[in-house]
Image (cartoon, rainbow, N blue to C red; front, side, top):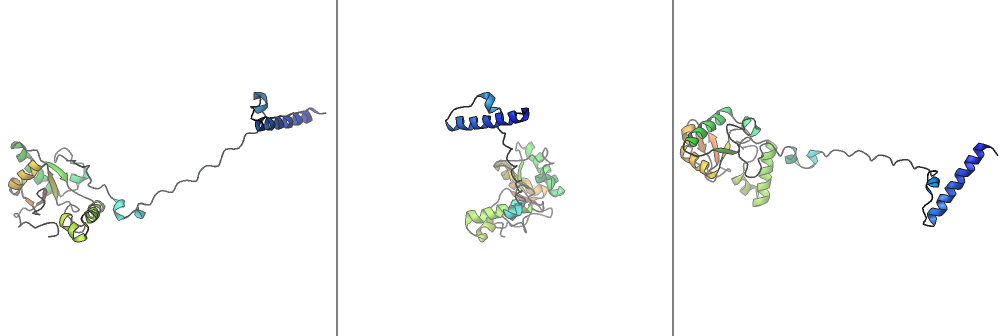
Length: 204
């Protein structure tokens, strides 16, 4: 018998022995286990397709432009690189900074709680208001649509905290900063020619 034939028989016998021992619940000797056949690795999983944001809804395309975490406030001096301030009308930002300096002299710290907003973020705010208040009409009294919002065009800021809003009510017109809506003491726009009569709400 040739050497090759003897190796073939030994391998076949080892495979049979491994199978019999496994069927009986016994572990085969290490020497026999080394003759077992190694199975090929499983095929790789198919790649995961990225989620199309348009499939989630139009607001999901841009939901962070202008977003601040709850309670977040920006310094009108130190955070000017933030798009919330950087994309404001420069004349408006300058007026807010002038007012903030004057307020600081009175011991009041002025912060910006909202400024520029993207179309997508403004739409999300409006959609949230519709769900909260139950109708487009009621929502429009509290949140402007992207088509009319001055935040989207960089022509409005919201001021906080409450002490700063109250200071701005009394002193903002000196800097051309006017409250626009009777129900929003924090919302200011630049009106160099003088403050117009208050509108009842964002729906006008």
